[in-house]
Every structure is written in C-alpha cells, then in structure tokens.
Figure 1 (cartoon, rainbow, N blue to C red):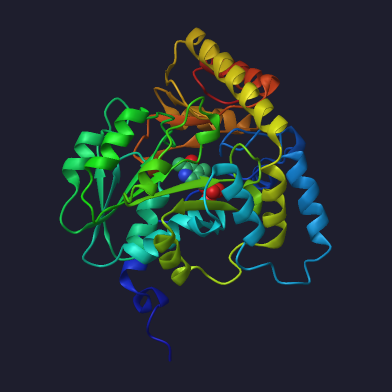
Figure 2: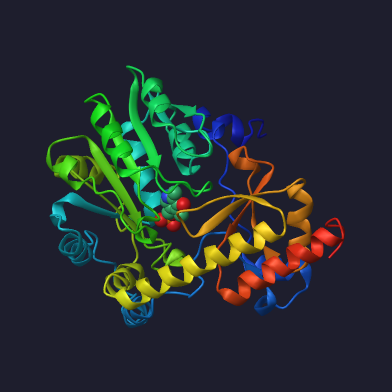
Length: 372
Ligand SMILES: *Cc1c(COP(=O)(O)O)cnc(C)c1O
C-alpha cells in the first residue's frame, strides 16, 4: 500500500520555493466572470499593448510550416543577429525560453547548497525562486524609496555569495539606478561574484547603461534581455543573456536541448528588425505613463514614477480595489508575493485602455470600491 506522499519524496529545497503567481490570463477571467473575453482588459503582465511585433509575427507564421522539424538547437542565426545588433560575438550570447529561462540556467550553474545569492527585497521574484530551487540561500536587501540600494547590496555580499541580481528598471517598482551607480557597483563587487544585470526593460530607456566595456575588461558580468516586453513576444517564451564566452560555455552545460522553439527563434529574428514598431511602442508607453500619472494624481493616489511600462500604485485597501476592477473586467497585478500588499502594479495600455482604467478607479473611489 502506498504510504509516502509525493511531497515527502521530493528533494527538500524544491519545496522550499514558492510557486510563481502570474497575472490572471484573459481566458480564465472570462470563464470565471462570464464576460466576453474581448471585453476584458489585462494590464497585469507588462505586455506590449500594441500586440506582437508585426515583423516577428510574420516570421513566426512562416516558421510554423516546418514545426515537424526540431528547432536549430544552437540558435545560431538569432545569436548572429543579436551579436550584429549589439556589437557582440555570437559566442558571447546564449538564448533561453524567456530571460527567466536564462536566469534559471545561471542559477543552476552557480547557485547551490552552501551558497548565497544577493538581490533586492522587492526585486523581480524569479531570482529568489530559482535560487531556492537550487538549494542556495537568498539574501534580500531592503530598497530605499523603492530603488535598489547598491551600497547596502554590496555590504550584503559574503564570502559564500556566488551571484548578485540587479534589475534596472526593476519589476514591480519601476525604478532604475543611474549608470554611474551601476558601473561603480559592478566594479566594487568581489572578483569571484557574478553580477547578473537584468535588462528586461532596457529598450524603454532613453540611455540604458552599457556594461559591455566592463565585460570586455574581464569583469564577471552577465546581462539578460527579453523578447517578452517591448518586442511583444511574451507568449513565445524567448530571451537571451550575454557575457564572457567562458561563462556562456558553462551555461551550455545546463541548457536543456532544444530549449527554444522554432517559431520563437524566427519571431525574435523578425522583431529585432522591427525598429518602427519598437519606436512606436516607446512613444505609446511614454504618452501612456504621462496619462496615467495625471489621472492618478487627479484621484489623489500615490504612485512610484516608472522607467518601465507599468506603474506601482498605492491604495488604502488594494485587495478591495483589485476585486472592484476585476468585476469590471480589468485585471491588474496584486503584489502580496512581492511583500508589497498595499500596492497594485498596473501595466501601461493604449490611450483608451488607460482611460477605461482611470474611469473605473474614479467610479470605484466614489463607491468606496464596493461592488462593481
Ligand atoms: C518580465 C521580466 C523578465 C522577463 O521574463 P521572460 O521570462 O523573458 O518573459 C525578466 N526580468 C524582469 C525584471 C521582468 O520584469
């Protein structure tokens, strides 16, 4: 007779980690609320409101005809393209199923029992989940006015620290550190610590910090980027990391075979050529942020100015506001998992979508967010 539960049989540190809680998908909300899927507005996952890059989408459609074939495992053409665009060598680039897939490989290779990983308290949660999954310990350093406190992070580095994660702009706070701050931090870290700089929102910045010269100079730095955000390909799961070629060779030791599908590889190639779409996305985002700031201010709400495509907003009762919006067919992101229970994260939409959100908040405020 079976007498052991699967939980007892699991490797303990696998269970020590929480499970990632994504924003609610539109299909599920439609099912639960009985609303038409087309009427639901999702501003919960920092997706591009313009939809996928048209050039990327066209290339993905072409690739679908060949899906009886395994994908090209080394992502050769995409690495060539990234290298050309970013002035890197293809051997300095590795591709993963989302940049979280790349971050997972980094943790598999460098985090483990007896090691610590340093990041910020309200940093993107994947660092913590993948660290705990490897049986390493996470050290979460408090932020300062919602920004990563790089001095405190430096002080938190211990002899057993193998990795440090810094996202800038950070999700969910939207805050960025300045280029001089980040460069000084990278230079001050001990030589044996690998600094992972997460650039998921770099394309939204006017002047993103460039750590390539430090990588070339031999600093232990690994940068990650994604096709999920400005390129609008979140559903295809593709991202990349770049760093020293020896580091990339180590990461290939843990990379699962065929870790990126052929439609995603093709779409990413197209998206990297879609300069018009990227420019339009930036404009829509900049205007959307201004629109949201104005609207939130009019409602007397506190928000954290954002360098990304989303805003952190503080409410008296965020749970009530979440429910109110949800019943109105608007999905935003609760942040209990990020230890920010008073805040909701709201992704920037197109003009009419932002208007709908602000109108719903105004109506809700009048009724104390009771019922929708
Ligand atoms: C969205 C996001 C990612 C990327 O996720 P993917 O796995 O590439 O979809 C990485 N880092 C941060 C900070 C993010 O917000």
